[in-house]
Amino acid sequence: MLNFNWFMQTLLDRKDRCSMYESLEVRVPFCDYRIVEYAYNMPWELKALDGREKGIVRAAFSDHLPEAITWRKKSPYPKTHNPLYFELASRGALKVIENKTSPLSEYLNGAGIREIIRNPEEISSPWYGQLMRAPQILAYIAQLDYWFTKYGVEVVC
Image 1 (cartoon, rainbow, N blue to C red):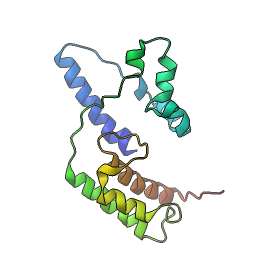
Image 2: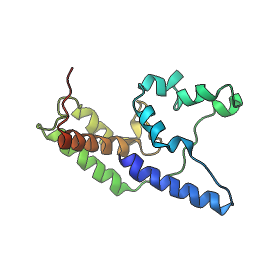
Image 3: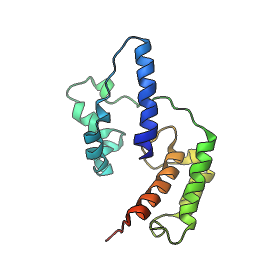
């Protein structure tokens, strides 16, 4: 929710200002809510096909674009990082892992989350955020806890 309603809005606003400065009209087809809903439910192995970010998109367009473009290293749109955001996201995640009544308590690795807070640049697992991986992961934990609690979500295995 934070990514879609905050980060994305910021990126779209910056995209508009930068492109209009050069008198360009830029379209962002992958921001369509239907594509986002569909992709959100894809297994990670499909999203990251061949171990690459946007792997499924790369494969889908491999017959339509030059190989050098299809498989080039991603160059993320620049974002600024406010240390206060990391601090607040860290506090939110710690609050969740310390709350034994949280619906997520049995699913989260407290030591792993504390390690992310101590060493935010050392995240090796794939994650959607390139420049703000740690803050986004930590905020996601707090968002999930809120969502699970508000809607009474139970995981049945």
